[in-house]
Image 1 (cartoon, rainbow, N blue to C red):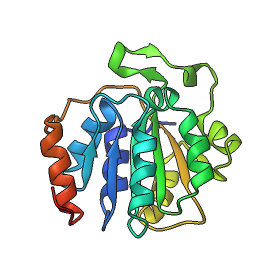
Image 2: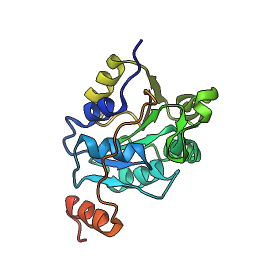
Image 3: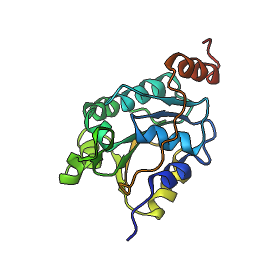
Amino acid sequence: MRMLDRRDVVARLLRDRGEMLVVTGLGAATYDVAAAGDDPRNFYLWGAMGGAALVGLGLALAQPDRPVVVVTGDGEQLMGLGAFATIALQAPANLTVVVLDNGLYGETGGQKSHTSGGTDLAAVARGCGIAQADRIKDEAGVEALAATIATRSAGPRVAVVEVDPAEAPRVLPSRDGAYTRGRFQAALGLAA
């Protein structure tokens, strides 16, 4: 079976985004979201490894009527495993965490991550109390997630998507934190 291409997966998940707010994890997840189309409702994290899921949680709690999607990688999520327990406790129905799992720490040189050695992030999320935590390995799973990603569910969701470890060219959105914050606030109708 052909492995899923991360860029194709992210583009499909964001294609019909509606009012979706997107938080990205460090590195390739940011490049993938930017490649799918820069948008003022994208909040790119540059130096907060391990924090994307918790930033998404805060945003989901502050904006309960809008779908919030975190797009991150397995290495970044491994640094923030405790986020799953806090997300489960808060239980926002508008939060989906998408973990692009290539089994590597891409930003530090491509070393194998714990997921290549058997750590199952969907099982960890379920163990923390997130009932809707699944592994996606094929196009049908991506399509099913894409069809529901912009809607509320019975609680938070985690989707661990197994992707090909091949690197794609970097698509760099602005790295200016003040600009990104201000643009995002304006997209939410808040004073910057």
